[in-house]
Image 1 (cartoon, rainbow, N blue to C red):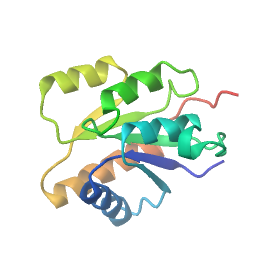
Image 2 (cartoon, rainbow, N blue to C red):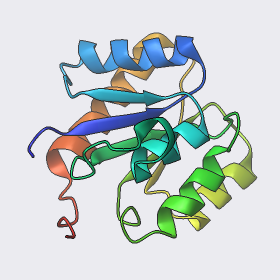
Image 3 (cartoon, one colour):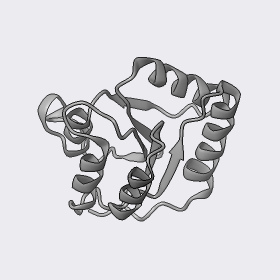
Length: 147
């Protein structure tokens, strides 16, 4: 499948809208699947819960992961992704407003591919999303699919 899906794991509806607006403004028109908490993200990725029965051959090209999430926080989601061979190689970009140094350290320790602080300024955010999309969806060579 050549559709490059982005899984956006974000509980704040304003940040979801902002991220989708920034993607669209940069002509990144990939399908965006939104999970509003960590449990929903894991259900989507592993085809459980409300996503039971979904086509598991369709996997995200990129996961944008907030850290401060209800039910299961972002770092725990990341740990679970990296612990499962089906998802261990998926590119995960932590996209968060957290300025805590320990979050950065733990993000990389648990396997994040990148850590980006959400800029407060909309124009800066648009530019950050542009660079992120260009690199992860166009330039980056993803790992081959495992069957």
